[in-house]
Structures are given as C-alpha cells and as structure tokens.
Image (tube, rainbow, N blue to C red; front, side):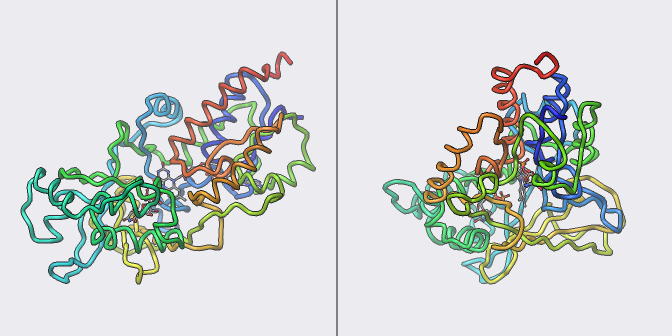
Length: 377
Ligand code: FAD
Ligand code: UDP
C-alpha cells in the first residue's frame, strides 16, 4: 500500500516524489515505462564511454534562484554557457557560413560583409522589419523584428522541419524563445544560472530518489502498476490525453528521431550545437556533448535531431486549436480529486526543465494545503 503512485520519473515526477517522501514521510511508488529514471533528461555513457543524452542535448538554465537552490541539494554544478552556430548560405557571397545564433551583431556583419556598430544594426533591422499589426504567429515575431530575408534564412526552414507547420501556423511563443540581439553576446541563453549537473542528470535523479520511503519500478506502465499495487493518490506526468483515454481525441505532439554517433577524434564541432535551418537538410541540429559535460576523452559523440511525426511525444505543439483541445482535458484534470497533473506532457506546455521543476514545487505547495501528511492521516 502506497500513499502515492508517481507516474513518470522525469523532472516532474522525481521532484514531487522526493518532496512527498522526504518532507511529509509519505510512502511513494515511482514508475516509468522506460527502463531508466530521468525522463527526457536521462544521460549515460555510450559504448565508447562518452557521456551522452539519449533524448537530445539538455542544457540547464534558469532565472529562478529557488529552482537552482532546490536542485543544488542533489548535485554540484559545472558552469556552462551554451553557444550555437547556424549554418546558412550568405545572401551576399553565396558561401556556406556558420554564424552565431541567436542573430547578433557578428551574425549580420559576417553574413553581409559589413562593419556595423550596435546602433547602426538597430537601424538596419528597423529598415528591414515588416509592419505587423498584431504579433500572433511565429512568423510575425521574426519578420516584425528583422525582416523577411533573415526570417527565411534562419527560421522558416528550421521551423517547418521541426513542427511540420509553417511559422505562420504556430503561436508566437515558439520562435520568441530565440531572441534577436544587436550586441555581440553569442550565448544561447542569458539566464542568471547556467550550469550542468557535475556528474550528469541521471546521477542527480538517483540522489533525489534515494530515500527509504521511495520505491522505484522502471519498465512499468501505469496500467500494470494499477493492477499490481494499491495507492491512494496519483501524480501523473505522462500525456494528459492518454490519462483520459483520448476521450476528446488525441492532443498533437511532435517527435524526434535521435541519431547518435561516436567519432574517433577528440572534437567534431566548433561549438556545442550547430543548427541547420535549410529545409533541404533533414535534421535541424547537431550537438557535441563534450562541450556540455567538459569530459576529456580521445573520442567524441554527437547527436543529430531528425523531426518526426512518429515516436515518443516530445513537444506539445503551441497553436490555438491545440490549446482549445487541451483546455477540455484540463477541465477533466481539474475535476480529478485524487490525481495531480504535472510536467510538460501532463499540462501540455512547452516547458524547459527549470519551469517543470518550478511547477512541481508549486504543486507540492498546493498538495500541502489540501492533503494531510499520510503519516498522520
Ligand atoms: P518527461 O521527462 O517526458 O518525463 C515523463 C516520463 O513519464 C517519461 O519518462 C515517460 O516515459 C513517463 N511516462 C509517460 N507515460 C507513462 C505511462 N503511461 N506509464 C509509465 N510511465 C509513463 N529543457 C531545458 O531546460 N533545456 C534544454 O536544453 C532542453 N533540451 C531539450 C531537448 C529536447 C530534444 C527535448 C525533447 C526537450 C528538451 N528540454 C530542455 C525540455 C525537457 O526535456 C523537459 O522540460 C523536461 O524533461 C520535462 O520533464 P517532465 O517530467 O515533465 O517530462
Ligand atoms: N528556431 C529556428 N531556427 C533556429 C533555432 C530555433 O527557426 O536556428 C525556432 C524553431 O521553430 C524552434 C524554436 O525556434 O522550434 C525554438 O528553438 P529552441 O532552440 O528553443 O528549441 P528547443 O531547444 O526547445 O528544441
């Protein structure tokens, strides 16, 4: 008999399992249908001994001191600021070049053979930006800031590949994740805290879940756990539509196929990630883990990301009709008295890791208000 069944051992499930067990003394069973903990942040050594992320590169960054402090209980950190280059054909020279992404002063100067200053670049963008009455779509965000040529070069093809939708059909929040800069800052993120768990994500999750009140069963589906165990309440971190048997139809998710390669050389890329926005290239980006992990090894491993309709649900797809369908499921979720829905799939939100941790901690606070600790219940 468990007080809680936590479905999914990713950030959402693991953060809550630890809080429930360690802070309240509740008895918690954590299951995951995969054969490991960590959810999409799972990392491990590949056959050559190079640390890789099975589900694509995960770079931790947050502005939330509370989230960073909480995770710091389970890991030390290695400072890391991610940098990305985009491989594009220069409109002025016709040459293939790799330039900083997000677009910044160096991107424009290198792409067009210019020597603009920050102020001049501001004016340069303003000349090219299109008037957009109301910024609604992922196309509006970019053309309204930098104009159509840069939009087509850096965003249109990448987005069409990643989502199988034109940016005009996607909510503005998607491309708004990537800013435009007029200075020379070439970091992908500007958050206050940017660091990688020193021993990796999986080690951090292991420490989080290492508690006498937590039992872990990997390789186990919800349906099986229901038959084999008894529990009072559920934390659900899988797809919300799955929980309700797809009653209103399937919520669309986008998937990826990861191609992992180990190369017999110390370094493969000039930076942690190279984006390939051209629509003619079937993958969107390639990443080299040694930049992220700081590992020293004679070989190196990289991952190519091929967007796909088939496969695990990785990305909720932000667009109005999907949000409307999610709202119907959210109403069902709100009416469930004994189940809490947490995480990227269960709340159908395009959340980064830190946002999921924040959401899990907030959920814990809500639980504290309405469910007495089981030890006294
Ligand atoms: P998940 O990690 O998906 O965990 C849910 C778990 O539930 C899964 O392990 C699944 O197997 C399990 N499950 C589902 N249904 C069932 C069931 N019926 N029975 C049993 N188990 C079930 N975020 C960042 O902050 N920085 C990054 O650099 C970054 N890069 C990313 C790159 C890629 C390619 C992707 C896809 C995501 C990236 N993210 C990144 C986002 C990050 O992965 C998520 O925010 C985070 O992992 C979500 O945690 P979660 O617990 O909500 O979901
Ligand atoms: N994007 C793009 N070109 C790029 C990088 C990003 O068009 O070079 C768009 C694309 O739609 C992508 C979104 O911006 O899905 C968000 O990018 P981010 O790197 O945050 O994606 P994630 O890491 O979540 O896959």
